[in-house]
Length: 286
Image (cartoon, rainbow, N blue to C red; front, top):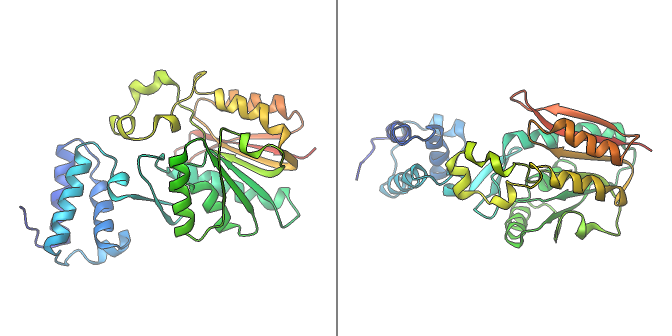
C-alpha cells in the first residue's frame, strides 16, 4: 500500500486520484477532516503531520469508496449543517447549504411576525432532522415537532437530536396527518420536488444512493406543495409563517398554490446563494 509522508502528501494523492476517477477533489479534504477529527482550518494547520498506518489505511479506503460512486457524506457518515455535524446515511437526503438559508430566512422573520415567546413549529418531512434541530437550537423557546413518512429517516433524525441535545417531538406520518387537531405558528418543509423526467439530468451519485422518496414527486414535482397548500389552513394559527424550499423553476406555481389558500398573505420568492429562486415564504396575518 502507498505510504504518505504526511497529511499534505495524502491529500495530494487523493485529490489526483479522485479527479482521475471523475469525482470532486474537495472530497479528499472532507475525508481527512473525518480521519483526524478536526475542522478544515485544523487540517491546514497539520499538513506536515505524519499519519499513522491505521489512519492511512482508513483514508485510502474511504477515498476509494467515494471514487466508486458513494457520496462522501455517506462514506464518512456525517455532513455539516448550520455549523453542526449531522449523522447521514442512505435513509436520508444529504443536507444542502441552500437549505441553511431556509433556516436563516425563518429566524430573520420571527420577530417581525410574532410577539409571543412560545411558538409551535412543525418541520414536515424532516429527513435527517437538520431543519427542525437547527431551529430548536437557534431558538430554544420554540416547541418543535418533526414528521416524516420514513421510519428509518425518523430514527436517524432522533439520533441527531440526541447527539445535539435538541428536544424534538418526532412523529411518523404523511404530510400534515401527524399534526391534525393542533395549531402551529411556523411550518417549514423541504419536500421532494424533482420531476421524474429530470432524473436523466442528475448526478449518478445522487440517483444511485440518496433516497428517491426524498427526491422525486409527481405532478412535475409539485404534488406535495399543492397538498400542503390545501392542508395547512386547518393547522396554522394567525399570524403564521410558512417556509418551503422549492425547485428553482417552481416559484410562481408554488406561490399560486399558497395565494389561493391564503389570499391575504404576503408571499415572497427568495433566491439562494447561487442566485436561483429556492425558497417560498408565506406570511399570514389575518
